Image (cartoon, rainbow, N blue to C red; front, side):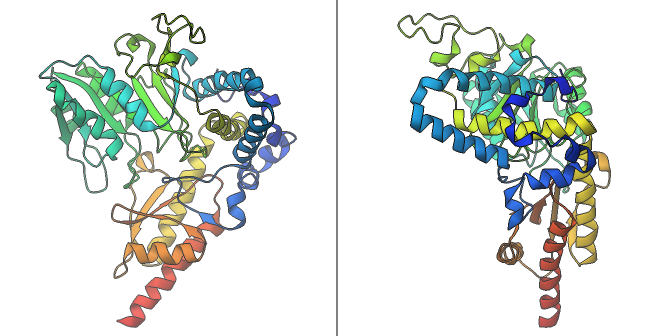
Length: 414
């Protein structure tokens, strides 16, 4: 099953999307924008930090709260069924088996599942690029207590990874290579196929921190044989914090120790009076306790929005839209006097555009932007804008107006 298979859409679970097929076919981005209440006030360009919720996700959270307050856990079986459906949704997104999917609270948890689960031996090593977000550094550094070395490969100032340098850092004691799909500060999108091949050719495994790319860029795990993946849903997937996904390729399931472990890790999880050690035969063994039901339900509603667009326009349409908008912003920022850091090749670009304005502190840009209801962050060389498919040229122009105002003020003060 893939997301372009319209027969896999569960219409009974998507009330917010009913009767919208014609709108999606005619103008998916206008329709998508109509599902984003944040656009009534903000030009929201901060999806690489924490995204706003879709209308469907917000409604799902309200509905859950109402059910939980009025009916308690008498409707728990329906909630649990949605969890199972969400695994299937992610399996469709990644073109993998639902048995390889674990629903997790955040990216850090997913990285630790792998870092703590691998059977380390003293003298083993791990290879990562420099400039990784701390979530993809600390769990690997923590293996020093097992006598494992962390090797960090220098990357270019723009975040570019030299695949040859990465390969040269791998030796016969390298157990795993771990990298981010998209650099959180630079926005550089790695050549995933080449990086995975570099690891596998040397006999190492490959872990992908997918949080800055998942949902935007297509990833077919039948074609790109990464071994492990983790991502939270609160960035580009437009879900709430505390609801995410991990992928563990089935042939590696028994390689990982189930650490941590809990009551929900075993087959007969609900036979509480019979604590029998019999781990679940799939990746759900890492869903160790009670799920974040409200968060997972909300995330599913946001995922269904992505599915509707992909089913009509193809899985690459979202990526193309985001890259086109990012390119438009990049050009307008340069015209306004900003210095941008965007990869020269579209193959390495993402929805992140990081820029600086000579003579102006990044915090000053962010402050004036917020006063004008434009959401950005300070990262990397300066200010980070991160654009989603529902954004439009008006959102971009609102940020450019802020930059032009500051650039003019700076010139006048010279």
